Length: 101
Image 1: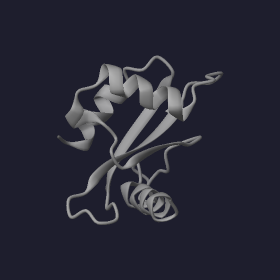
Image 2: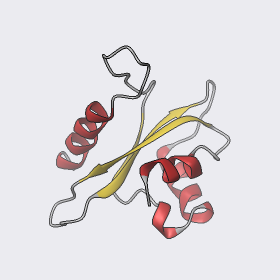
Image 3: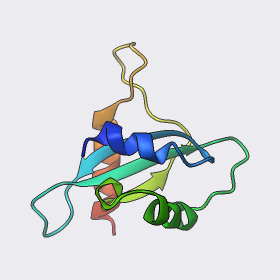
Image 4: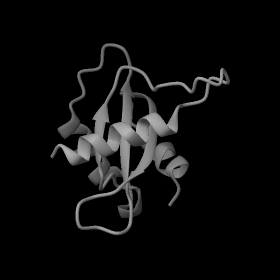
């Protein structure tokens, strides 16, 4: 399943403003796993644990964030000036998070 398809499921949560999914390499695994970055709506008290529970109940198995999930204040934008999410920056951030576990 593509990252865009998973993102479409993640933004169905009422406290999610934006979502981006990137592939990450887990230790001992050959296939990349999806890692999600979530921007919460202002005033949201949603926790990572609550969000993971919601995904387990509401999303299909192929939409799960097996690589992990992080809440961030804003998605990084590319420096090319086109207002697109900087996927390379997110991939680096995701891999760093996985490597630090």
